Length: 401
Image (cartoon, rainbow, N blue to C red; front, side):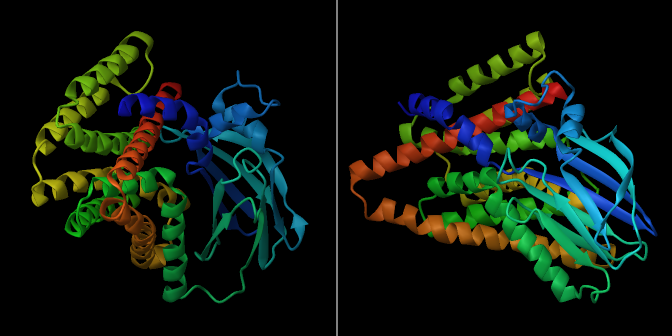
């Protein structure tokens, strides 16, 4: 019954999940005297959202689709004068899963800058654009442009950011990043639905926090940089796997046969039609899933729960790191910025726990058995459907890179 409900919800929610999941792009503006070097980057799967635009020729490569979309949708002003573009946007080699473009401008020398960014917002109103401005003397500034704030200014004669200002700025960025990350929020909900006590909540959230803090740091510092598409797909799969654990505990029987069938179909699709993640990657995820579900069956040891959630935290940490890897960190305040972003993520998690936790507690302790079963099963079905959708849709993106 729960699987049939999940399938129905998957069909109904896929468009909504796609529209409201985290959407972002990045730009770096390096200013040298009157020359400005621009680099723009965006996940390839974000560009596929433009297919809904009737004016887009979907037969073109994704790089060209994005170039056609943004060419007249951004501008740079210095001293209230629009800077002239020296060269058209061109595509650069980039990390797997990303599109990277480059251009340059000639601008009058001035003590202020204005960036206007109109791209993506009409198609994805929740889209955020992160702009990193670096001056010749090493000073840097960060802007976040949104649908409501498409134009922003920076004044270069402002007092350089203090450690406190940098800390507050990156804490806000961390909070914002988790609150707009529907996939990360859904994973937290999946963990909370699994918990039966405050102690279990503490154990699971602590494991998740330590895991993502470690890989976020390693990734931003450049020591570990896994494939972006694979990580994004694994975030979706982690959600579905936690729900499967919950289902297995509920029905007191194994779900391994369903998992095996699912991965046989995925590996078959890859080998025959070359669709999705690499076959070896799928095989590795399958083996991990079997081991995970076998280990947790009838086993409530706190140490095991901690270690498994720590592993999921490793995956999500690489996802959290994407925004920092693209906009960069101030070299002179690297430690403060990185630590503050981590704190911001934790604050965001606490806010979510404070909002969702009491509702789940009341459902377990105060609601009637019938209402509790209906609410619990419906929540599991929705979370499972969204996890499956993100895993499959993001896996398919691998085929086009």
